[in-house]
Length: 296
Image (tube, rainbow, N blue to C red; front, side, top):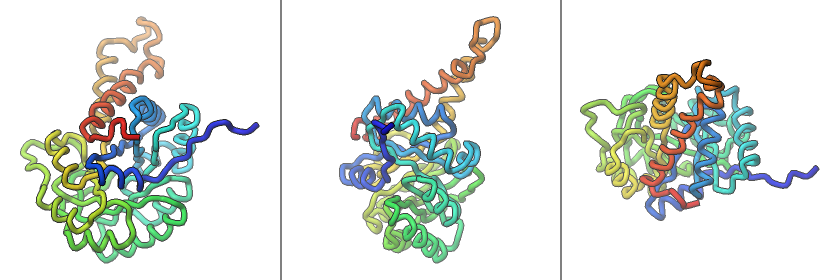
């Protein structure tokens, strides 16, 4: 029987170009399981908002591999009848091989993170990823400088990006660029000096394409808005959703709603629902900040 409905993943290139031209940022939200993915797709559809679903190598391994993640997302696009633009993005791909695996599995966008290599090697590897991605209509993100903090075992010291390196990296044919501008992964510590807006301005002047703010969780709203005005067109969020999910789940358990004497509150469909709803609420709030809400 012919399938009546199928929504194909799109790459993130047009989303980011549109955001860059119109001074807003598309939200990139990391997924960790079925609940995460379903909640994000439902709220994106309900609010008519374009979305980039991000999956790190660690999360992909946790969920069962590249093919499973692609199959899950595509199946949800169909079953939920999603019509807003959705990209599935490999976040912090640590090697050319991992980017190729993601592309072969059906990811529509990849990040090659060569920031842990000398810059010349980073450029060579990025060129190889771009050459593999383009015939498959897959968008590519690259990184200069390093993002502070740690994510899935990837540790960055927070090196500020160099405008000259930005120009060279854009010449490889990438679609959007991540750069260290004082941002970090994970919760922001007391005494964090804030984003380096002068560095962002200098890098944007050199790059002239949409830029990516990693470590978007916890940056004050006024700094987020200023960064968008200076060329940030994609903002990555992971920690903020995890904290919201954990807090809602904790509240449910501490209220004793999961105890057998209180009915079937231990059923995972009930146990995980408060966290599921917290993801939607957080998405709703953040996309309003980013300016992408309703822009599908």
